[in-house]
Length: 406
Ligand SMILES: NC(=O)c1ccc[n+]([C@@H]2O[C@H](COP(=O)([O-])OP(=O)(O)OC[C@H]3O[C@@H](n4cnc5c(N)ncnc54)[C@H](O)[C@@H]3O)[C@@H](O)[C@H]2O)c1
Ligand SMILES: [Zn+2]
Ligand SMILES: [Zn+2]
Image (cartoon, rainbow, N blue to C red):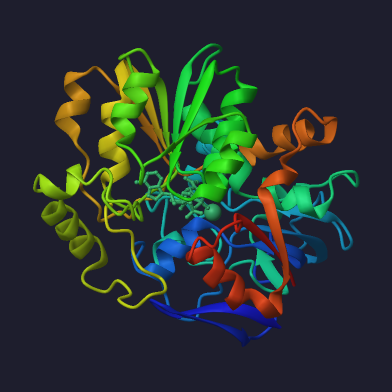
């Protein structure tokens, strides 16, 4: 079959690889009808989320048709149409039962303390071959996969595999309540769904910070007030716009590849470049990538790993809550702890508990309470995946979410 294979930092290829087979009685083989590219894939290719095993098939978003099931899978059969949540969970351990499916005790072959198991990730997450492929082996299929109703089409369902539930999880972590003022950092696919989710939870005002104009346009279309950090200091702007109080809830939907202030073509907002932070950011990048970040034009690591965390702490109100869904690698240790402690902040973070959240979102979409389709901007055959990756990595205007058709 054809699949997107990680060879090295900055080197992914569309290869021909062996078709997957059933390895455990709880496995299913799924023929993918849709897959997608996520910001998390970019971290791995840029070298800011390290530990990838060469040969791993990338991709952790998928919708497809079950081809074959092991004898331990009781709820699915050949022909079942399913959504594949990004994270894998058993549905039987105490964590899964409590809803923490991203911390399942049994899904990760590296052991109960190894953390989240997901498709197409670093060795420490499995590793499991991913979903940017024609077929996939899906472990713990009976508990992990979500059967799809016919009236939720692939274009919508693929958005429910990772990014909509993650945005929703971000709003949950940030404890969004009716009337709250919310700031979402990042207007990528995840940030846009964080905006939508904050609205579903009754937020009063929602601000969104990014620098990509077409993404900020989409944020506005979803009901947010846009702040372009290339044009103004986002913290000053947000304090002005919130009566000097700041936001009740802040969501980081950017992660380790954050870009520092001062990259604006108009030279605005150079402040952080001039007060000694440049050297600090350079050190962060160096330590996180261990000097192995891609150097040329493509796959460039963000040059301000802790930039969004710093802004989040400065734009949240005293005693407010910050929800971090942007991904940071295990070796990242750059969080401004003192400032958070002294302002009585609540910090909640982590990998999305997809399997707990997805069924509710399938219903929200099916009922028509919210239509996620606007975030899907491109549909491409798997054969064009490398071009699609480049456009997404380069933040080409208008490129937000691409669905791959294997
Ligand atoms: N926790 C989870 O379970 C989970 C699941 C999926 C994705 N994620 C993470 O969510 C994040 C977003 O994913 P995505 O697919 O939307 O990625 P993306 O790369 O498309 O979007 C990131 C956005 O952040 C913007 N940005 C960069 N620096 C910024 C800054 N300083 N301030 C504000 N915005 C800035 C970029 O311009 C871009 O639009 C990634 O870190 C991804 O790994 C986490
Ligand atoms: Zn993802
Ligand atoms: Zn479990």
